[in-house]
Length: 318
Ligand SMILES: Nc1nc2c(ncn2[C@@H]2O[C@H](COP(=O)(O)OP(=O)(O)OP(=O)(O)O)[C@@H](O)[C@H]2O)c(=O)[nH]1
Ligand SMILES: [Zn+2]
Image (cartoon, rainbow, N blue to C red):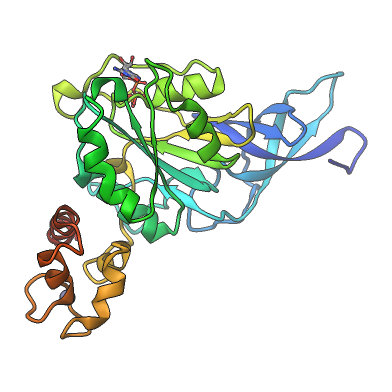
């Protein structure tokens, strides 16, 4: 806090909530202000949303009475990371700025469930590609372990253990795995993401003691009804924050191309130099070390199938 004029006080804080035109800003010492931007707000991120949940900001508060709870965002600091919303292809691409879902994320937490909706490794691979492309640390959470017989899910997940990804198995109903999850979050700013109905809100409610709206499982309807709308960042009692974000279908994967996809499958990196062609895409080329590694079981066949599915889907999106 620094004082400029007598009744204007400046605070450094973080945007912890976004509601239409207003933002909630929380200062390091725990004060909360309802703030808005104004035409003179200085942006540290000119190509992108002016302000988003997770942004570090400077606010000006004019003290009129004893307690002023409203302020103006004077400056938004440059972001270290950002989850960007996928653009609507029907809208004008060139003039539209990047829309940020959450800023300054330190950990991506894809949440899947053992059952209802069923666990698919294809979806996990999509998250991992995204995390690798953004160089974001990732923690996989498998919820609803009470609905699993205890063997199948862990067998499916073994490949991710082998690749070195950290996994937490939890059941909110049985209250199992919660302490490990809290420990794995490690006081960081975590973005939870997953299909509707996997239990994100239920987990976040339990971790933070705040009641987010939870939905009756809606995955049966196909797409699922997304009940998580305005992003909110919630403090964890042991330090750090969690942000509930939409599923990966809502994220922009614009930086992932057919040319760079192969670098985001970490097990490919060791064998790729042995491919006959240096630009090998590991799809149709002869003398491909990745395909050989799949053939002799060094690379998991399911992971390779995910690679092919993503590879061929990429051209369609372009
Ligand atoms: N069996 C079981 N069900 C759970 C568990 N955790 C949550 N659920 C149920 O799963 C359903 C969906 O939970 P939510 O927390 O609303 O799921 P969500 O991922 O936040 O969904 P959206 O808000 O739509 O994105 C609810 O009926 C929860 O009660 C669990 O550990 N085991
Ligand atoms: Zn190859």
